[in-house]
Length: 208
Image (cartoon, rainbow, N blue to C red; front, side, top):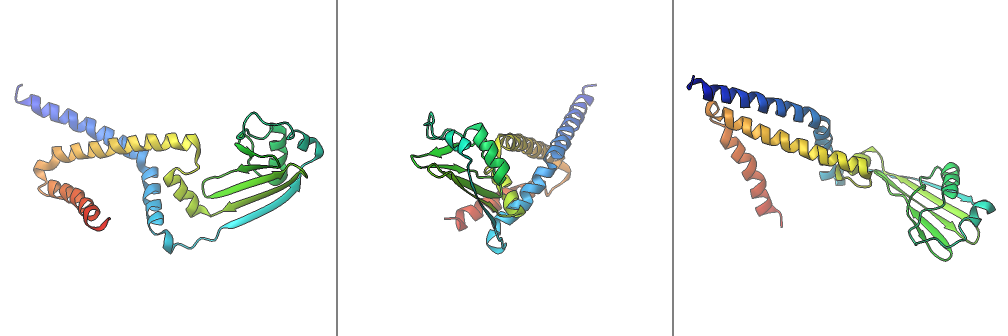
């Protein structure tokens, strides 16, 4: 019985680690593929041609909407009134609702950055003239921004945190499985050491 206890313990940990390893790998699969591909596109950005598509539109606020902008806002970062934002979004295809706006004496400016592009609009408070510009940098830029978490919102930020934890579980369970199988695989620790030494040497010698 005593001789079987270590064997049973090893079998239990092997089963548990394998289970956590495959679960974390399943959760990480799409994210790891995405981050691997965008790692290549980001690292070789200078070799990838990109032609941004710029859309420019103009409009004029109706007098009733313009009057809603005459009262001074509580702060210089107050979003546009809901009725004005709704009219602008319907007329210009903008996404101004709830966005912080920069208020000045004669103009309101709204910046609307997003993954894979950018947009802004300005409102002349004297005439009601509206100028709107949207820049679309394409799918590669969109995926690169997902990689960096740039202008992607709170939900994607939470996903990145969960993905990072899943990657840690995947890596650590993989390391423990390597340790448990290392006795039968002589090349295990040399390969692990190589995976550590190569990036350290490259960082110390070639990165200044």
